[in-house]
Image (cartoon, rainbow, N blue to C red; front, top):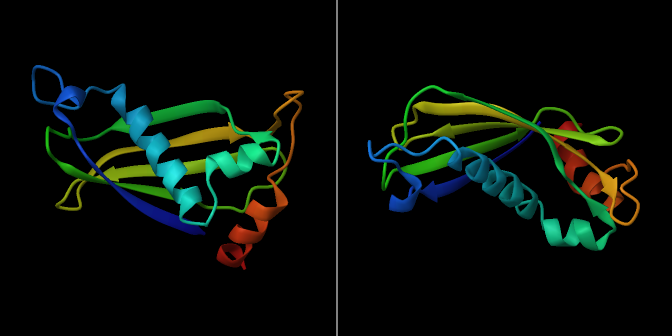
Length: 136
């Protein structure tokens, strides 16, 4: 299992009149978590794209348990429970506040596609090599 954590500070513009993070911002928080989890492996989305593979989001779900507020320091926990096989990769994501209380939980399903043709592809070998040690 591969787990990474990323910190995000809630900005004022991300909140509504009730001082609560607007629900649409959680998609961006999840994205930051995914991008940084790949970066923590020593790769970037840009590197993956340079390998000729893109990763569009196919499905995104979120359950909002507790609100986040302006200036909260959030922890986005991003987990890969399985080494991706085939053309799919599923990230399990959770957002916690500074007290360690779960605020939001969800998952994001992405496909590996060849950039030029949009045909299904597999995870780039270099990315597979970086992840293998977490699943042995």
